[in-house]
Amino acid sequence: MIKQKLKILIPVDGSDQALSAAVYAAKMFPRDRTEMVLFHVDTQNPDLGKSISGNPLYDEKMKNIDKWMSADHKSMNQFMDKAVARIRGAGYPEPAVRVKIKKKQERVIDEILREARDEYDAVVVGKTGRSRLKDKFIGSLAIKLAGKMNRIPLIIVDGDPKTDKLLVSVDRREEAFRSIYSIGALLDIQNFSIAICHVARCAAKKNEAVDFNCKNSDHDCPLRDVECICPSIESMKECLVDSGILSDKISDLIVEAANPVDSTLELSKDKQIGSIIVGRRAIVPFVEEVISGRYSQKMLKKMENMALWVVN
View 1 (spheres, one colour):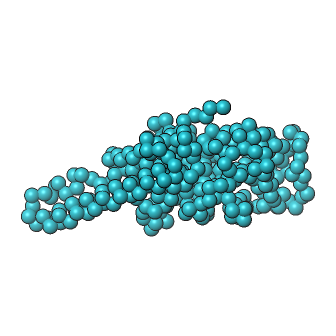
View 2 (tube, rainbow, N blue to C red; view 1 turned 90 degrees about the vertical axis):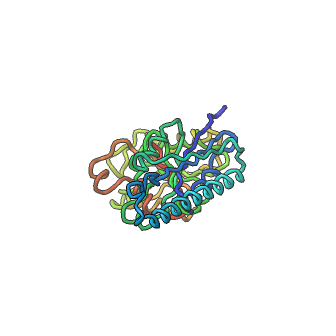
View 3 (cartoon, rainbow, N blue to C red; view 1 turned 180 degrees about the vertical axis):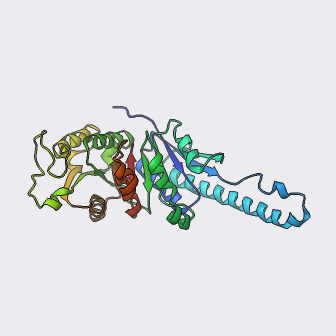
């Protein structure tokens, strides 16, 4: 089967984490069919200070502003050269790596969302930016993108995660199979080991014995008022095998726990898995969306040295 050519958007701001995100992308995606686009939104205002130009009282201030803007552009150019070199060093040919810098006309997040609509297959971004203080109190760009990105997967990178193992966190059938199909299309998955993980929540609360190996497709989940996903896990494995991975590189991890986020992160850490894939539901209950928060956003806030794939 001939797989499609890929176009990956990597928004960068010159931070160390942005560089780590670019390196992660270079390790994950197939080198022979992927185009990487390093995208930067230049937030500097070229008209800065024009209103006070010509006034001798502000001449010295204008010199300082010009020096700062020049130094910032130089720093970003150096960052781009370094990022391109790291991606090229991972085996990508020169035409497969592009740099795109756009002057800010809207909010940075809106500029990225607009760019992402231009036939990209995924977006890879660092979890934190240059200002960790702003990220902490206002919220990072990655968290905001996780709430607004749709149509294509968003991959958020924290630290320098391992790239040989993937964990697909499944809960509902539709989102689970969408995640499976997505990684099958985006990756040469024969190069990875993949664990399909389902965290059973209510069994821990009810203290009931649950047969997690149930094969009956009509089985109702004893955990919540939803159809049990456990019988579908074998079908998910078959989809991965059809995409090219060997069956002995696929495993399933079904565990009882009251807190799915903490359990999934702990499991990933114990198994030394660097990437977690979750499906994002288009429609969620009001309480979950506004009050308790989406599963992916909870995961994003707590994860360390991992990459989170939010498959839309």
